[in-house]
Length: 124
Image 1: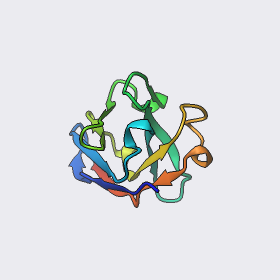
Image 2: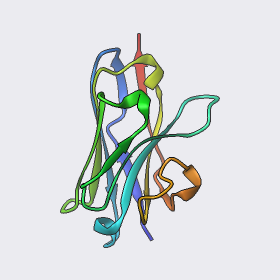
Image 3: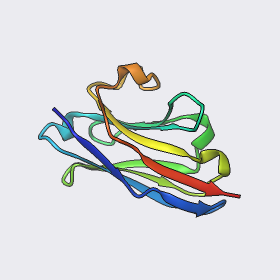
């Protein structure tokens, strides 16, 4: 069993930056693919970014490329999402997720574990 706890959300002006963190419990963290999703009010949960177990590969949705960076520290059982040049359309609840393997990462149904989410609000 893996438990995920997100932190770092908040209110920021457009153009600003935030760094989200996701702390994982369990001894399998270094074996897991980690990802970030987001869900805006009235919309479906959407994929944001994913990173392989060793950080060797990353994958982003087009709308965040060049602005968001996913990284991980296996010694700390933590995955991060650095967000710069934030836009109002980035406003959402951001969820951390974990799975084994690096296939079908854009599909919410392929992920096994989820955090409770952290709110990110970007004002214009």
